[in-house]
Image (tube, rainbow, N blue to C red):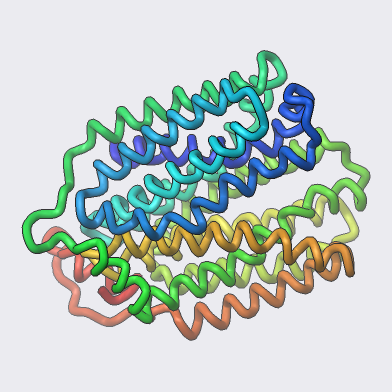
Length: 401
């Protein structure tokens, strides 16, 4: 449990660092005498390293142990966030944001792999849901608190606070028991990469992750504009909407683990995609604010309810190459975050939010079909007494090893 809290704090820090920039851009632009559009580079600068470089660091945790990689990545992350707090110019900020993303790309897949190393499906599914919960929690708590700190002190104080939290997370992870692979069980760096690229189960999971999250990342970019233009909400009122719906994300991620253990991860993923796809299809047609909020809640529920299950499936594919597989899955997720807003922008420009909802629903249907066809089905294995169950027996509910 202590390990879960340490990793949750680390992911919470990366989540704040990722989300809070959007709220701070106007303040940062004014302070640095730059345009708002130029400050938008800071968002892409963070996401690109996580999308492109995570696979190159994943095999390190398989080879040298999760704790070493997590500590290294988080220490680097904390240092670069601290640098952001004193950056004198936009150019320096962009470089530091790239390095921020690099630190997250090193540490985060190892964290989910650490959770995937737990011996039973119940322990793994609960740990995965707790770690995933840290992201909406960062949006729910970290974003408004960071914005408040920026308004009362400065935007630099926000990044300084994140750096201090990241240092605390690094210390707590450093105190976890060492988990270095022993003897011949450690997988080689090149061997791990070859496995991830060549194993069809890995490629299937990556395809589902990428297709699925093309939807929420793209359409979410224009949700605030929809609520403002359709229902006349102010910017502050929209931010309250996101905070309230952040609660839905926290609750859905937190409860996901129980359903993964009882229904199986594959069924949870299918249910989650179905909820998301239905919500985005009907959201543009909702006539009242209350109905729109309810439908948006279903969208948020589906997204955060399904992510821990998808992570559980990825973590169950291989014991020896778990860190590598998780890093590739992280890369697929972040690549969707980079690509989807561009595509969604084109669709929105040509057909508005209604066409974007239809387009996103098509993506959801494609993701559902891909998940149904490609994700590994549970295999029936003889049940053993719970106290004697081995890791290999438990993972059958998620995916074959």
